[in-house]
Image (cartoon, rainbow, N blue to C red; front, side, top):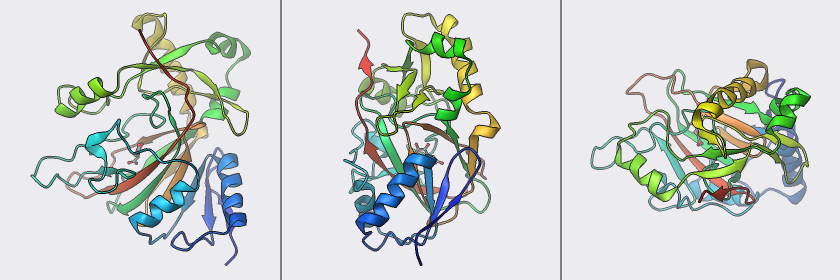
Length: 283
Ligand SMILES: O=C(O)CCC(=O)C(=O)O
């Protein structure tokens, strides 16, 4: 079956059909996938019965992979290129360290000096109802701001942290995150290195703007997140087993909704493609 593409929503996303990621892809197939990725921001591949090695090999075609040194508790013990997003308890019976992953609007690795280019998340065990992920288009978010707001945010830098909104702030994981990933500043407007388009770079991991107080920053952070996540900019994904979603972290944000029954297993695995440097540590 030849490769074909179907839009997922008005704002962003496409399903790519006619591709079996267990088989080697030709350069022309990959080029078409890559072009669609840059155009649509997220790609869905359904029904991909692939191994961990094949997941990693396909991801490598997009660039160098992260070994997740900034998230050591969440990576797969045998495959550092794989990040676990799971609520399956640890072998010693403790709750999974990654059970709350992504439950706030964010772009991956924004809390590191080299945020991610893109991520590929594979749905392995999906709850019978819910466990959805939402994605939003940060080009649209930027383009639809007024000229005055664009001018105001042009030189602003947001301070990103690695901590989670939904977690116990005193958990060992959160304490470790604060140590490994000190706050980092990132421009609020970034130019996508491949498309040349400007995208808003904000999210719920931003605590404050550089040279502004938290009180001054908060209303603007809240406004920009609310604006960026307007329903018309969003695609909501209902997972099926063996889905793979690839998203471009340079022009989208996403959130795991956590909308499923406690006790149901939800297990996904993610590779993270390294991006280009844009962040700097604060003195
Ligand atoms: O579990 C999900 O739906 C999304 C996970 C996530 O936010 C991430 O991998 O960055």
